[in-house]
Image (cartoon, rainbow over all chains, first blue to last red):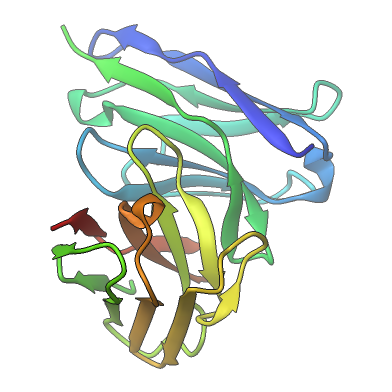
Length: 118
Length: 107
């Protein structure tokens, strides 16, 4: 069964750091492009980061560039999002998602809430 | 950057009625559009991709149409489980964009 189980969210102060994890099962990360997508409370969806199958290509949205880093551990079949210099506006539910047919997202992880507040 | 504009923001309908949701792109995107359904407390789920192809498990009452700049998601006969928020999405090069969403609520 294909699924991703996320962990690592929580409450952090502005300027702080947090690492999110997304453990995949039923497929190998090395066979798929993966992304992180977030959703602020009551708002829409915002794609933030992407990593290629090989891991050699990474794209980030301007809103997180230079602060967030996507990575993966093939041996653990896990995807990560290292978040630094967090801002109040980074408060959101963060989802990992597997690429489908290159352009789309399916399936999605269950999401993990990150709250940035003093 | 492609901007996707969804309308209406909210639509109130009764079970059994037909829903027509719109997604307009700021420039032509061919058939490169997907639709997602998101229920409260759940992650989004892919319904339609390449504008009109149903994803695995998508009921046949859901259909997608359109090309270029204007796209439509139609729900033929609303069932109780269909009341949710629907998002359209596009990818161009390295940038993925979502529309603002349409909430389908029970009238």
